[in-house]
Amino acid sequence: MNKHSGETDKVQKTKLTSSVEQVLWTKNSAAPGGKIGLEVYTQFVGNNSDIQIEITDKSGKKFETIKRKISGNKFWTELTVPEKAKDELFAEVKLPKHSLNKKSNGLYLFPFVEINNLKWDKQEARRGDTLKLTADIKGLADGNEAEIQIWEHDSDGAHDLITKFPAIVKNKKIEADWEYEYHEDTDEIPTEEETEKGYNPPEYFFRVNVAGVSADSGLLEFKDWIEIEWEGEDGHPAANKKFKLITADGNERNESFDDQGRIRLEDMPPGPFKILFEDE
Image (tube, rainbow, N blue to C red; front, side, top):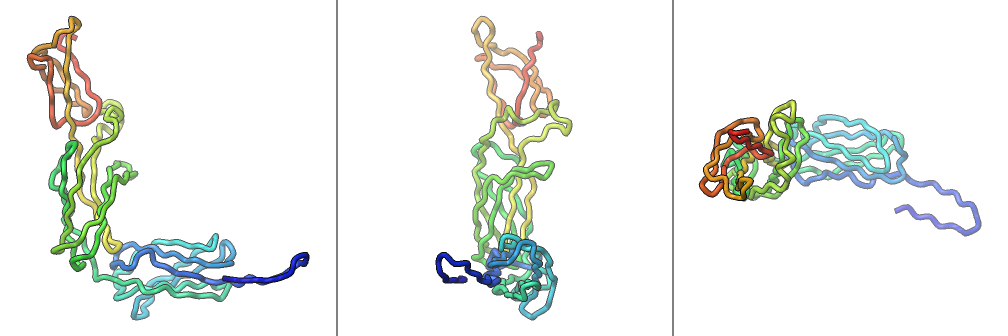
């Protein structure tokens, strides 16, 4: 820390010494092809100063030089670990204008990591279902930790993160259970006739992150149920009354109430529906 002492009631002049305080990887380990963050902290370095970062491995092999600007005495970037890097990765920061440089600690590199066969144990989910998620992990020893993220899929790519939790690699696999719940209002799901792109039910995928490498599963579709109890204008149940049901996906099906004026239908597309009686 820079220190200065002086006297009151006098103009003091001092020169602040610029420095590179820290060069930090955002994780302790990564794998070739994976993503890793790098943070640089400085003191008394002017905004928009040039910063250069040389990326090398333990053998000294140089892979790239990142050239950017630094502001607010802090710099952050994300980079892909070079696939040919071995053992450890280093980042050497240089501030040419200030004649400063500082090298990071080594980032431990696993061998090449692959994530394959990401699977849900079901293709469809219903409220309260417990789903099993599995994936094969190659190149990583048992006992290492992976992260599983559950995402709600968006056709435009603006996926919503639902939750995330750890999983331990065992026998070159990871397994986890996740209980499915839908907490939104299904009335807000656009129907087939309300959107140009057509009906799209809530769908989900899970992402596995390990050593900076990630992979995504296929999609899981949400199925819901419909339960109706109908009374006529006279207050009596609409016993055995036939009707046409138009579901949120635009499909039509002929149904009828039981002798109590009730019906429950499973495996329905979630969202608003319509009922049309034969005499309407």
